[in-house]
Length: 233
Image (cartoon, rainbow, N blue to C red; front, side, top):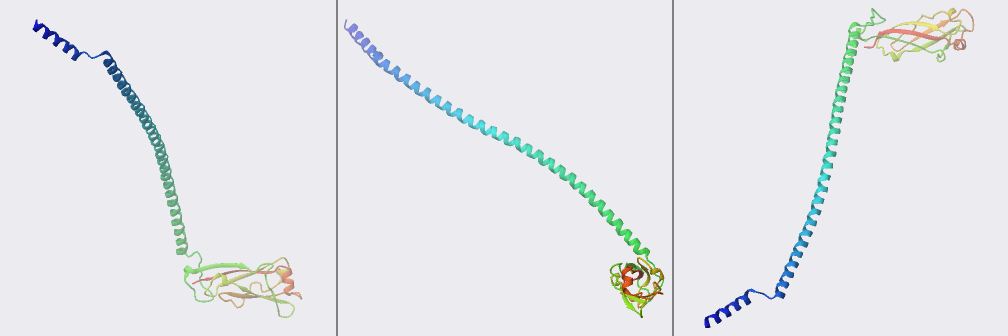
């Protein structure tokens, strides 16, 4: 009997130790639910934050892809420009080559003319100069610019003609003629050259009729046309 009492007391103690009151169990369940809610809320917040990060990274990746696409277009355009520049450079090189060839041809022609002595002076008023410097020079005193001067009474006029622009260093061989509007066929001395020098000569004219003076010559547009052949060196 004593043993049975001891066993009963042990059973009571066991049940008391292992069985919690219903209120305590309910409190623990509520606490567990709250913990689970907190965990779920934290998980949702982490998920939202992660979604925002993924969205931002996706946008950045999209921007990078657009930048790469634009860079590819720029590179393609740059290649096209480089290709065009290479074509332009090739065309320019070809043009320069053609111009260089033309200049070479012109130089050869000039040298040929110089070597061939296109103007030949057999002899002149003085000793000949360098054959390569032989030159033909021509001009006129002008119909309205010839400054005639009276000479020898009432029938003569003369004109000193400037030929210094030809650059002769020796007295050239000079040929003259009178050009005008009328009557100059009657005058004499049209081919008579006086006082020839490297830079000038004079011509004297006379007429068979009276009053052939500078006014008549000017009114009839008489002028001296001339050709000179000489040396410039």
